[in-house]
Image 1 (cartoon, rainbow, N blue to C red):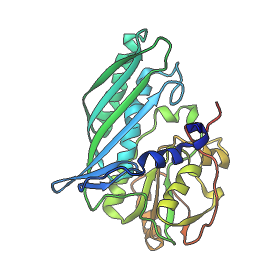
Image 2: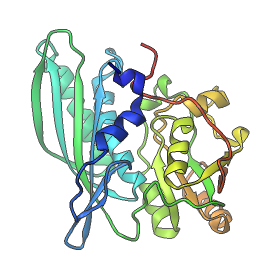
Image 3: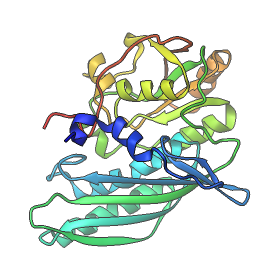
Image 4: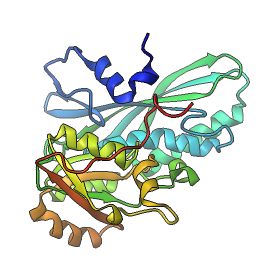
Length: 295
């Protein structure tokens, strides 16, 4: 019998989503950073995410930083769609021996992140786990986006310039617990430019760029030495480490120089790393896969 480990994450998700019924009000279904549904004249973003002890954070990680990360991951997905956050629901799955002070500190971290970037916790659920089981925090949220600012992963075109924000690689040294979701940058970007395709970098550029290109029906060519790297990181680490939570997006080549000029006046690092192509182009391997990682 085949296992999920043998199948891998992307094929597993594809099988689970195959044949799912979509209602008429669903604008964007499975396969993007968020689902998008229409409510009257409004577009609503829907997202759920989970962090698990031993997978997304180590047992000794400060609970406040774990809380920050748990909601910041969802905020990053809202940014990737050009949206803004709204209401959050939090489910905690905890062994009974979990210290109360750890849980309180966890919520302090979540509240601090939402106070800075937007959104509010309106409810959730708690459930117990067997003794010694890893803690899990699941976050579900809804946000909103205007039709003008909505960006999906599948709108890229051959010839588009490929950009990334920030620096990539080395997240395990602490960045994955304290990153800034790029909501402000995404709002400015989608207000001032026609962004063709966008996503956040959670599984590594080597995993996420091929996803975006494939959904856009394109190939890609990148300049590896142009990839902005965290100090001390190799190109390989910048490609494969994951959990950068920066924005990866494409824009027409004609608009690229104007974007670079205007971005520099408002925000820090933005780097053009390549171009979408009509044909297959470059090939990247590596990045994070939940079900094919070494055990």
